[in-house]
Image: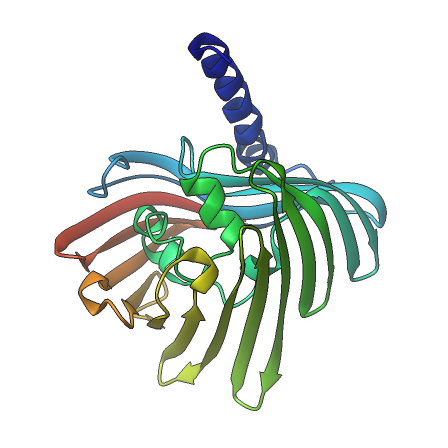
Length: 293
């Protein structure tokens, strides 16, 4: 394939990949009753490399009725650093079957909270706590998964295949309440050039005026060290909430990150998000106007 044809094909694939994220913004603006959504979108600026100005978020939309429908969504920012999801679905009560490119089950539970505090920084750390599919799509060329997913209340199971890399990814995740704790866990098995696994567990509970969350992730399939994330979120007033977060690779603590984030709620589901901190030897700052749906 010559360079011109490669560029044309690559541009087309990027346009197709951006479609679900664009649909998320359009649907949020129109507030169509036949769609239900869960997540957020934002426009911001940061000191993170290649993310001076960014537009993105993390969310999933689905048709609101039982039976045959659609799900679509995205995680990341417009440009190279994102993963998009689109699948044909069949819903029956709380159960949902999807075929196409559904969200990996691994990413539906014990999700790293750094993406809610400073999304641009989270996107350069997807090897820690995120699915091999998400990390691969964001960081590797032509990493295009497709597959199946089954989900019900408190659990999800998915199976994906990446043709260009002859890689199969099986993921399982779930969450449950244990006394005062909310526990979530996920496991992912990857069969490609070799066999590897990712695993993570997260616990959260109310502590004082806020909620504390701790997450441990084993990231062997992402070729990254195990990591710990600790976050505490609490309200300062009816309009302001703070999150203090530390995420540290256990074998490479010098690459850890410490962040302080503030959500300043303006009207309804709109907020001004401001965050700053220090990571891998650099100062970090981010500000965004965010809409939750």
